[in-house]
Figure 1 (cartoon, rainbow, N blue to C red):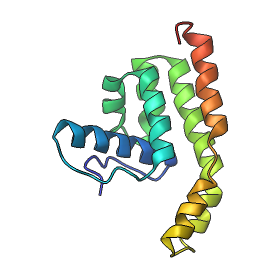
Figure 2 (cartoon, rainbow, N blue to C red):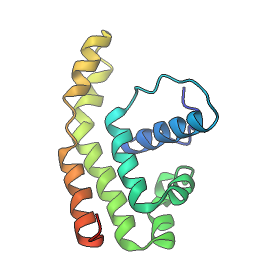
Figure 3 (cartoon, helix red, strand yellow):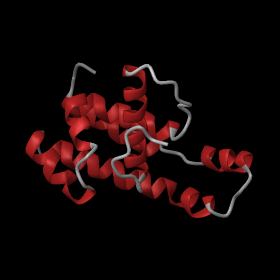
Figure 4 (cartoon, one colour):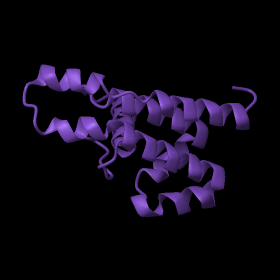
Length: 137
């Protein structure tokens, strides 16, 4: 169960929810099993480094159709486009996993299936953004 459950449904949204759950649990000294969505959480952390924790905290509760407008208003077009690109690429890279997930009951098989999700292109998108926009990275 997420302590912070705004909306899910996309890999990036799930990663953000889990990231915020972990942050709230740590802040409030609540013990949780922080093992779900590890790949998605890592991407959410990297995105948070770019857009800032305060913006990410607010973004968590903005509806999916409004996220681009919110980010454009807060940070500008580049960051809004970055968010959309990351989200769409994560969906593309995980669609096979999510399609097969409901057909698998064995937890070991689910873990093996999750290992097949490769977000390498998403990391490349983030790295390219940082190189173009932040020479101090």
